[in-house]
Image (spheres, rainbow over the protein chains, first blue to last red):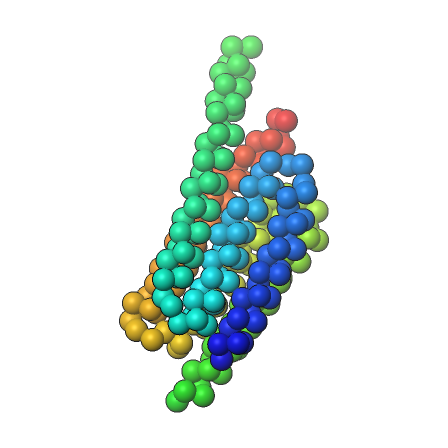
Length: 95
Length: 97
């Protein structure tokens, strides 16, 4: 059973790596940000599987952290990108 | 009893892994950024949910089972809000580059 879980974790990591390779090559900033979100869920799932396979429950905390960091980085990106639109709106009102 | 738990785990984890594959294929094939964002956030979350439910029979203690469920809940909530925020920034860039 443990080797099946490790195999599933490796499969998910391979699939996530392919997606990351594709995302990180794109020029659009928002798409590169999606790589972080993908790592949050894909990496978290692989970690949960490895944690269950190795029997240590500490790895589930690492998966929790990954999901948390993915959320915060996406919010930070959205906040950073939102600032210009505020200025743009004010310019529109003036013109 | 132990055999049943293993069977349940194998089936659910396999389907969860296939959903991750579907999310990645969706990401590679979809033409538009917004649809790619949709593909990875939806498919990965359901994949993570299935893997967490698949791992529940393997949990040794109560907290060992509750922790992956909390990870999945956090991933679910954070992915929903994060993809909405990302979609807003993508949409803003497309409408007025």
